[in-house]
Length: 241
Image 1 (cartoon, helix red, strand yellow):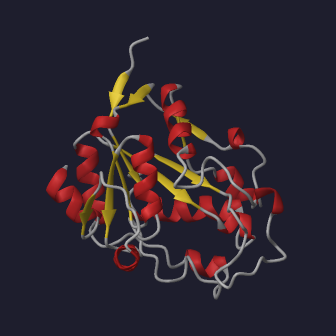
Image 2 (tube, one colour):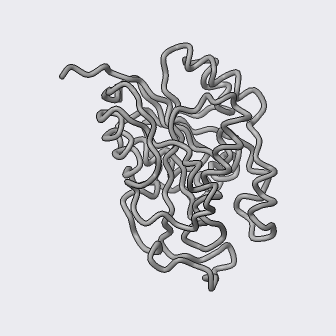
């Protein structure tokens, strides 16, 4: 079978295509309240629509460690993606996320009693790992993409035991054209993950980008070399796509 070569924009979510508002990383608000804050960064809808016109698939690749930490349930992740997707006029083609965390500790260095111990530890999918990219690659070759699961939302499922049970929509079987694809994010883990997977990493100064970039420079840490920096995703798309 001869596959179509598909170029993709792999997108971090919070801080890259939607505002973080300081709530997604905080312990101060119930997650039901946090959901109400989710909104696209100004201009992102138009930028993503332009990228799609140019033939790109738009795939969200997001760490959702709050599931492991017991901060929220898995259905919350699907519901927040649904709310964001509605505000983006359904532009996103697929949503991949990692429910794990390495330690389970919150921002105060404490593990909640609600933490899901079976989700705590090292995994292949949490960025800077590339498991989510590999799953997307396999799915796309098999003619499907992981998407919003309304069943999980309706049933308020706390955790899906097995990735295969998450809803995947049909798509034209394709292989990823890595030479024409990008990973865009506001954290170094996004850049490292993109580099490891073999697509061009793009670091944006929105979200936590500005602070994280200057912290790394001050510490003179060893950073990836194959990346570019842009003010935000809108600037990248305008100047590159």
